[in-house]
Image (cartoon, rainbow, N blue to C red; front, side, top):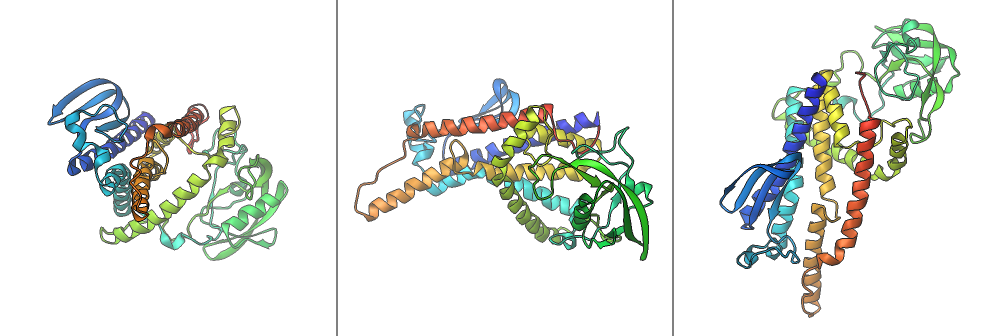
Length: 413
């Protein structure tokens, strides 16, 4: 029940976000005097609507987004009444059209910023003292080792954790393996994977006292550290998770309302960098998605759709991991905001780049003493638009299929 509740809550959060996105377009358009004839939440058959002024508001039967109709978005729109021609969107100055078209993404960014600020106050943000530098090999001892290349909790039948059998405890610091120092958790993982399956000598620190124990390393399937897109190979595992912060150092830090503003800005900067890096790697992840759809193992680093995010939201609520729920909401809103600004039709960014292309071209022609070439013919761009829709639709179908039949899961259910 908690899982389904979490899915419903996350789906509702997405629907509200998209509805506010369209409201951003509508409100800014109205503020500039453009005519908005329709604003609906959802698609398909109309369930309920009312008209106030010149705009019809309502709810449709398929809750998968929303839309608003701004009269005359392009010069080629053929449904503009003669009386509405002066208020057609394409006739307005480029800066006003830019604000209207970017208002949807700005709304997503605003939602993400508010969510980050509230999280900083009530849940906490990652401790900045632990960011940007390798952490020592403080570990959390797992109950088992998952032999397949999966990220999940233990299930009946999974082999027992070698670390637990060897007497290691949570927050122990591993300092050496077979006499080789491992100053960081990354060094520990690398060293363990290099060793053959079987006995290994583990040197550790606990409460300031150094100890030593023997662990029988288990065989597991993992992707190579230096080639995360490669096929899994057999390596050794100790049965620990990490890195965890040193004892007494919190993983998350809460802030007051004023201090939370600066931390929100810092967190948003890191989020922006991570989002752009993730978007650059999307094309190279397509083969891994296809592998997941055709029955192969799902790489946890592959993109997810709204369906996948909703499932993870359900898992987060089921396991009382509200920090994960909020993090998913923040990340999804930020990603949608950035994605919508890409300079491709039919995205908002495509309309913005065309508007500015027209403006710059007019300036250049005026400087050359030549007549203004006028507006871009959107009809000539339709092949490119259809290509973007086709590629985007195929990628969406691929991710949705993977999320339905071979989803990423962070917890066992």
